Each structure stands twice: as C-alpha cells, then as structure tokens.
Amino acid sequence: MLNFEANGRSITAKKGETILKALNRAGIKVPTLCYMEDLTPTGACRLCVVEIEGRPGLVPSCAYPVEEGMKIQTHSPRVVRSRKAIVELLLSSHPDDCLYCSRNGTCELQSLAEELGVRERRYTGAKNEYKADMSSLSIVRDPNKCILCGRCVRVCEEVQGVSALDFINRGSCAIVGTAFNEGLNISSCVNCGQCVNVCPTGALREQNHIKEVRDALNDPNKVVVVQHAPAVSVSIAEEFGMKPGRDVCGVMTAALRAMGFDYVFDTAFTADLTIMEEASELAQRIQTGGTLPMMTSCSPGWIKFVEQFYPEFIGNLSTCKSPQQMMGAVIKSFFAQQKKLMPENIFSVSVMPCTAKKFEAQRPEMLNDNIPDVDAVLTTRELALMIRRGGIDLDAIKPENADSPFGQRSSAGKLFGASGGVMEAAARTAYFLLTGQELSELKIQPLRGLKGIKEARFQIGDLDVGVAVASGLGNARKLLEQIKNGRDDLHFIEIMTCPGGCIAGGGQPFNADINAVTKRMKALYTIDRDDTLRVSHKNQEVQKLYDEFLGKPLGEKSHHLLHTHYAPREVMH
Image (cartoon, rainbow, N blue to C red; front, side, top):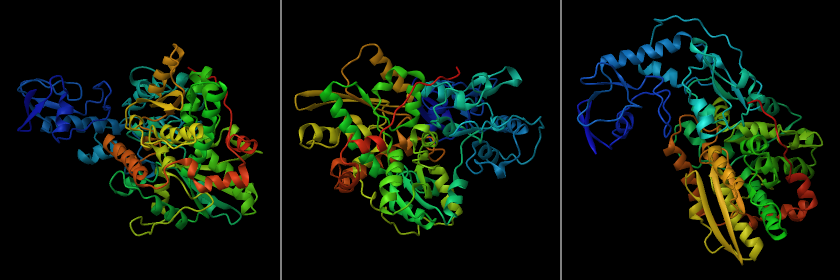
C-alpha cells in the first residue's frame, strides 16, 4: 500500500493503482471524457489532469500511477484553466443546437461546461458539416456532434468485438466512422446500442419511434396495444430521479393506460411462452440427437452477430422468436380473434431496454402475411420521455395489473432481464419436461451475477447436462471459439448481447454505473425470491393459450407463429 496526499487529505492507494482510481475511491471527483472503467486508459482527452508538486507539467490521472508521498492538487487554478480550455475548444466547433438535441440535459459536454463555468465563446472554429447517417433501423449517427473521445470505438471493438466504428482519416480531418465511411446499415453493426450508452454527446442516438406511436394513439381506427419487457420496470424509475433497482411495474402499467394505450401486456408472459417452446426444443434435440449445443435466440444483436461472424453456428440457434416477437404474433392472431379485430387495425408497440429490438421488429422474417408482429419499439428512455410529455406523475399514480389474456407471468419470465435469467428459467422447465419433477432448488446460483461467462452442470435423470451463459459479444466470441476448437461438453448456451444482459441494454437510462446495473439485477432476483409462481410451465394463462389456440409446444400452429429462421449475412469490413 502507498500513501499520498490529495487536496491536503491523506489517502491510501494500492501499488500500481492509477491516481484517478484512488481519488474516486476517496470520494474526490475528477472529470473525464475518454476514460472507460476496466479498459486500458488512453489519456486522450486530458480532462482528468492533476497537478503534482515538483512536476513541471500536468499529468493525466487516468493513466498515471500513484507514487509514495505524492502531493496532488485536483482543482488548482492551473488545472481548472486547462480543463476549461479543453471544453471551450471542443465547443468551438460543436453545433449550437442544445435546445433541439436529444441529449439536452444528459449531455456530458454540457454538464462539463456548466461545471467549469463556460459562459462565453473565447474560441471560434469552423463548424462541421457532415451528413447524419440515418441508414440504420436502430441507431442514428451524427458526426457533427462527435468530440472524438473514442468511447464508442472502444466499446464496439474491445467489449463487443464487432468493430463497426473506428477512427478514419488523419490529423484534423479525423472522424469516427464505419468502414469506407458507408452507412451503419451495411457495416458490421449489430444494433446493440452500447455505443449510444457510452457516447457523451448526441453523436449517437436511437431511431426515435415516438411520433409513430403518438400518431397511432390519436388514430380512432387503430387499437393500440403495448407490451413492456422485464428489465424496463426495474430501470425506468431512474429516469425520474428514483433510486436504481426500484420496481415500478404496476405504476408503469397504469401510466401506459393513462397515455391512451387500449391494452397493456407484460412481455414476461411471452418470456414464459418462449421457455415452453425453447425448453421443449432443447429436450427434443437432446432426445433425438439434434444439433447441440443449442443457443438462445431472444437477443437480436446476438443473432445478427452470428449471421455475420459465425454463420456456421446458425443451426445451433434456437428457432424460437424472442418474447417481443412472440407477443406481437399472438396479439395479431389469438388476441385479434378474441376481440374480433383485423390484425392490420392493431398497432402493436413494445417497450424494450434494447435498440436492437427496433431492427428485429423490422426483419422480413417477422412478417406474417406481410403484417409485422410488432409495429413500433420504444426504448426505456423514449417511454420516460413520453410519460414526462404526458404530464404523468409516477409518484401519484396507483399501480395497476397488466391485461389478460397475456397478463399472468412467472418470476422465471421476469428473470429474462438479467444475464443468466433465460438459462435459469429454461433449466427449471427443461428439468420438468425431461423428468416430470420439479428442480429441488429453483435458484441456480452459478448462473447469477455480472460475470461475463458463467457455467453450471445439472444431473437430469441419467444425463449430465452442461450449460453456459455469456453476456457481451466479446465473451460470446470466446465461447464460440472454444466450441470451434473442439469443446463438446455443453448442451445449452445463453447469450445476451449487452454486458450484464437487458438490464444494461442500449436503450436504458444514460449515465448508469455498475452500481445501478447491480441494483437492477438484484431487484429481479428479489422478485423471483418472493413470487409464488416461479416456473414457466405452471403459468395458467400460457397453458390456456395452448389449450385454446396453439395446441402444444413445437406443434404446427406454434411453429408457424412462434418460430423463425436465420441466414448468413455479408458485411463491409
């Protein structure tokens, strides 16, 4: 351990630890722009500079290790002047459209300008005149607002292993762009939105579907239904200043009704439906010698990743649609029949923690008689914006239950929001389908937590079943490479595109740290611990749907409505 002094305080640090980490642990805030937790620091933005007694220049605290006896000033006049000059230079070429920007109020550059007292323009630079890239179904890229911090490049390459974005051109002409500066739609982008989450400005944002939803709500000829994903209810409260991890499922349902939606459904219901189909598919593959390991198919960024980078594993993917698409399919079939509605007169909306769901809903494979299962997808952030625009006070509104026939859900379906949750839910039902008995311990601890790759083994009758869970596509790549190199002890693999799962999806509230993500995950585990219905196969409304409409899992009608197929994709590298 080392001892040093910061702003007159004595602080202890670990040997080799950076100044920034030691200061953060001591509760001393130092601003950053390029820094990313757990990734090798680049020291590019220089906002985190500090003054060290006896050193001639300022040093970047994110990359400089602590030394015994150091005396540091984090906010000396010299340091503050340096930081202020950097922000002023960034603003000199930045668009002056804060009032119109999607990040107004959540922009880190805006916050830094406020923190440093930037109140006049001392530097004038030529404004960028790049065209916004609107080609992607999920993400909009506006290079005019890019400040070259590199965070999107790093998360795309180092965390996700996709490398759709990089620095192109040289010197003062450098920008962040795609290969050959073409549209995101023909790049290797998988629409995960992790780049949007780490972008400090409005240079990256989701494709906004609010107008389409508002138009549908105002159309008297449309019946507008909405579904909300398991992870949304434990994260949207943060958009309204509440503590991370607060579950507002009932309040959110009431708010959606107050906004004018005719029916509100819980996507956790079709998470249970997904488990019935997926666990049946796994049992069938095990019993008949089908392609193993079977891999989950509920995360659309992961699906596109396989189609692009590992097409040889397409046969390993479950043919099940995601819960979002299954809900859309049963709404426009079974529900439409029940309510005597034409499918084309139903406008189906989903609220998801994910930007890739916007892409998934518009895939041609998700059309049934040329009618999409889902018409529009809102992120958690977009729903929060609609609630605010509607003048709805979440603290004052009374909780309400979701509508039937898709209102009941098990806590297993709710676990879909966290990495490992799909596997845990599937294991509970697959065990029952193969043995006729319930798992003695429904909580499967090795599959829980934020670790990037998790594994477990189960004894199901005479069969020793191996399962693995990966979150973040960089970790998925590691697992796939192991299988390519001969690993053969796994039967089922769950992959979530985003690190930690849907609770940290690309459409979730901005500026969430690991503490917030952890609390969201714990909230889902608490729901599972306290619920009385904890397995998907005992969901009575799911059973009723099979009895009255679908027939049986993997049957002809369920195969037509609830299953799909995928194909290899070519991308520009």
